[in-house]
Length: 232
Figure 1 (cartoon, rainbow, N blue to C red):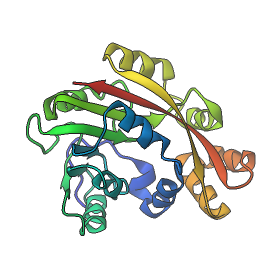
Figure 2: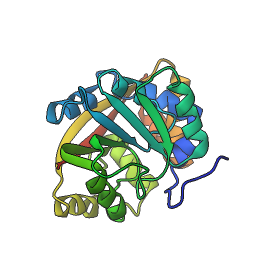
Figure 3: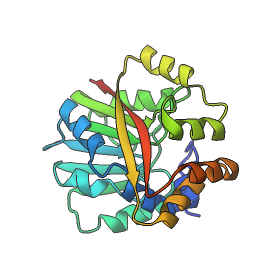
């Protein structure tokens, strides 16, 4: 395993199964509703965009299509190396090793920061919020996209897998921090049944994954998310 940035919070799904997580990334949100909602609040055109916890860099090329500059930050060395390889032909993209709690960027250097299913899960992420306040310049915005555990079968499966997760505590935390929220009704759409089942097995405990597979016919999964944001 490559070097891990100090303070990084392990992400078992992608850290342990990057190939299967790639299938998940490809399946999620084919209509790109999350990107549209984000751009409606703060357009990325001509911006300096920061992707926090960029993993293997799946979203970096789409950001690069419209942004002036894109920086991916990833704490897992092996994943960061894959992101570098993925974006080798994109001159406006760079990937840096680092964590959300210690972003390797100068003060007031970013227009838009995005964290998608990475680090900013509620109580305990205050150090990362402080870093966002440092690196996002005036007129910029920060976005957090995360699972909405209060809704749907996916939320129920997640709650069974992580019983210590308190949706009330998470919502209270973001309210106190002054962030806004918008529900996102996303979905995952797979080409093969085996891929759908493999993704469910990296997201949930074996028992819950078996139940999720039994409850999910076909090739599609409803995936309720929430978009949170703060303007600076």
